[in-house]
Every structure is written in C-alpha cells, then in structure tokens.
Length: 338
Image 1 (tube, rainbow, N blue to C red):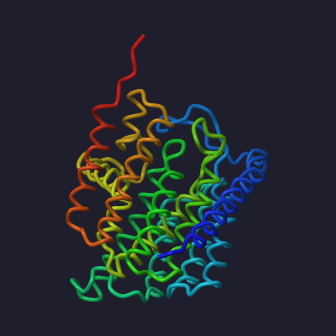
Image 2: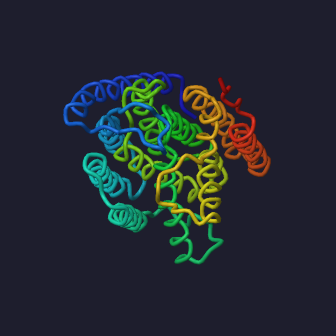
C-alpha cells in the first residue's frame, strides 16, 4: 500500500498534470477557432451553437508524455510502448477526421489494426482466465477492445460526460491496483489519464467552450480499454467489468435496440439513456453529475471486488447501473410545455 508521502506526491503530480492539460487546451482553443475546426449543431446534436472540436489533442499532449515518463521511472507493463505509439497514431488519424472528415471504413480499419497490434504486444496472460482456448481468448479480447473504443466515442454526446468517465475509470483503476497487488507501474497510467481529463473538463463542463473530438475520445477509449484488459488478465476481471459498467450497458443496449429496428448503426443519433434525460429536460451538468455519482458507486463496487467480494460487488454494480438507466430514460422530469 502507498505511504502518506506517496499519496501527497501523487496528489501534487496529478494537480500539476491537470493544470498543464488546462493550459494546453487554452492554447489550442483559439487555433481551432481560427482554422474553423468546429462542430456545427444538427438534428442529432445535443448542443445548439457551433463549438471548437478536437481539444482532446491538448489533453493527449500532456497525458501521453506523462504516461511515457511514468513507464521510464517505474517498470512498465509489457506492451506499454507499443500501445502508446498506436494511441498516438490513432489520435493523428482521428484529428484528421475532426478537421476534414474521413469515411467510416478507413476509421474502423485503423482502429482494428491498432487493436490487433496492441494485442500482439499484450503479454499479461489470458484475459478470460483460461476459460477459453488461446485463439478464442485473443479474438474475444480484441472484439471487446474494439467495441470499447467505439462506444467511448459514441457516448461522447453531452458536455462533461467523457471527462467524467475518464476520471472515474482512471481513478478506479489506480485505486484497485494496490488492493490487487498490481506493480506500481500500473497505478500511474490511470492517474495520468484522470488528471489530464480533469484539466480538460474545466473547459468542457456545461456550458462547454470546447469539444473533445474524435482525437480525444478514440485515443482515450483505446488507452482505457487496454488498461481494463490488463486488469482483467491479472485476475481482476470483475473490477474491470464493473468500472465501465454504465458506459458498457448504455451503449450496448442502445446498439442492440437500433439493430432490432434495422437502423443504420454507424450514423449519429440521440437514443442513449443519458441523451433521453437531456431531451426530457435535464441539463448537461445535471446528467453528467449523476453519471459521476453513479460511477463513484461503481468504483466502490470495484474495490469490493478487488478486496475479495466479486459476486456481491457484481450484483451491487448491476443495481447501480439499472438505477442509472431507468432514471435517465423514465424518471427524468419532462420539459414543461408552454
């Protein structure tokens, strides 16, 4: 377990990274505006005014070097350097998409290649704890990782939501590491992402001044997905499932519903549970705040799982997620009609 001195040092480090991330976005924002890298509202948007997008580039400018530095100072998990390079490549491709737009097929192909190469460098052991043959374990892990990258992008639909989710997952992964006996090299990456996301969130909290863009959501989904697979491969599969449980449930259930209705699932939409809450009158801030509170409960459940209570934790997490989905879809106060 970390000492008090370690906690103080980590807290100061996180504060510094958050300030650097805030400053990086501050420098980047006028550049995005100048070159008209903006997200114009449309029928599927949850905002009503054009705003600069691609500000995730500022977050990554801080997070990726800080993660690399932590890997040099502490023993980095196998595959770390490959994953960081691939995340940088994905971020570059996604920024091009933010600036000028790319067809869906090349974007998906780039994500698939990054996942395949990341798994080739993955040496933490079987993700499914030996329950599947090695070839099937790798295939299922790759499909889950690829889906997580995409759902992380799909769920970035209102102010503050992805910043909140990144902070929750990064902090949760860092907190379970000591309980699970993970090496110190697995504590810092989650904290780095959480701290950089906190600095970005100052700009993105409602009413937002910038949007993350695909450059941020795709790269963050890739990096966080790898950290979750790493935790699962090291025996903490329940905690790795619980931490992103709300995002997984909302995105997956919405996708299945759209498939049943034979809709074009690659097109943008406003059918996620959190989007329904906004449509019924909740503000972006209130909705993101509820997600933060729910994620806080999921972190507690993940800690219980890491401490040796996996089934009780999984049952409790299921109730938390059900309550969040039900509240967003059915209990959110409808907009009053004038």
